[in-house]
Length: 304
Image (cartoon, rainbow, N blue to C red):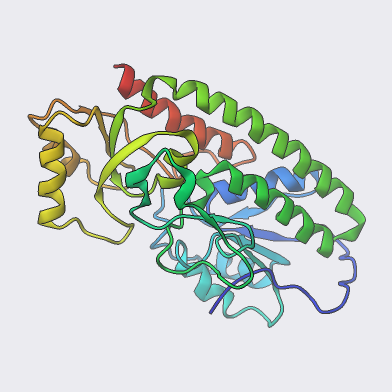
């Protein structure tokens, strides 16, 4: 089942209150919070430090999903547990699936090997929606965040016409903020540009392509993929040849394998990367904190 914006066939009457909005992960929550501004606060389902792939809703959270006026989420490729909860909502209930939203730039797993080039990214159109082969870490490309701010504002404005102008203005301000954020992240990453890096799993293709980084490989390919012996042997040979500057563990994953891969290669072990921001304090500033945090962790290893 595809989950995209559920648009009514007729004009939706204004709600008595600001829409109740539920989101799945911290970066999505942050973008929605920026658009809502002082009008209201979206609810974040993913608990701090929890695994976004294998999360169980509390009864109160399931109730919040059922009662929400709008659910904004990445899609079943990242948070399938929310997809199951959405199936119990009334037909036509508003949901905005960002992975499937028209215009979202998508990459396939494995494209990170050619990081530094955005050629592998393709926008979703009405006839070709996202599928299981796409890397779902789409929020790590700021161009997607800029697109989504407008979509979120439009959907909130549809549900709450009285405040549509406020949502639109908040989205405009947030887009300006992302332009400033991109410049900051680019400056932070200056020491690591063109340096060969390895990550624990292939979650950083959007980030590396957008900011021109060289991620030459990962221990695991996808979120649910266990690394095979042949893959590890090939990556280990690359590292032993001295072709890797830094290798990064990742939050929620055991760093032992990263340590073993780095032994005797000269590759530096960087700080743990957090592509979903599960360790961050949620709120409107979490999106900027996520991108700058990734950049600083990478740059610190390269300059160490």
